[in-house]
Image (cartoon, rainbow, N blue to C red):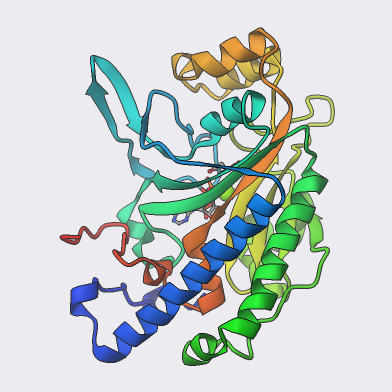
Length: 321
Ligand code: ATP
Ligand code: ASP
Ligand code: MG
């Protein structure tokens, strides 16, 4: 990613020049191709495609997360009950994968009112879409293999079928189909090498996508209380940064309760998960979520991921559309 001060804020559609409209159209075609390719891979592997929801009592706490920067949480009352806009569908995924949908994915709109100072990171918008997936009885390794196949197939096919768009975006030569399997690093080793800003350090240095495991964060990711290690992962893209977060999940009542209390997350917002876990109805699952604007932004080589959005959602900026 270029230096923050060099990043221009993407403009709304009505303010684009003819050349900018051509570029926008190319990125739009790459988004369409990417959605088609990824959804086909998941459907062909037997995943159920669920439609998303926008308002729920329970959503992702986004806490504790070392990267979280939320300015405001949206909560309103409907029918006399408080509901929140979807931050991610993680809680829905755990319940759905434990019951009627053992393999599922959702193109899920997430609202996260990021602090306005994130306008020029180039990686944050305040509304985005995750391709969020979850699989019952899966391991981290199963998820790695699934995602590696999905992304390498996508890039390989796209390089063959979208040559003209990639040429317009100057990505024809620089976009390489990733080699599988991707390398895996432990966050502890990266911290020792690069310090606190290990995410930027490894993203700049690597020439291939890489997995990073063992990242302390929200209660639903699996933590081994004996070793203190977390069975979770992020996928980092070269010269870009994080594009996916996921984990093997907690499903045991005592552990979930202990972590919710430890994190000082409101227990009443997670009553259903706690009840299902207590009754033994929450199953072991693993999954993750791919940020679509980030993935397509990396493929297209954009300076700001809001360029992949028809209606840009740049932190701190509200347009009419
Ligand atoms: P970051 O640390 O980069 O701010 P995060 O770790 O807080 O992101 P997650 O909660 O892991 O984000 O969200 C899952 C995925 O959704 C991320 O890997 C990313 O691809 C995408 N994502 C998260 N926040 C944003 C955002 N504000 N804008 C665009 N995509 C996002
Ligand atoms: N989608 C992520 C996951 O599956 C959760 C998140 O959005 O942070 O773990
Ligand atoms: Mg993350």
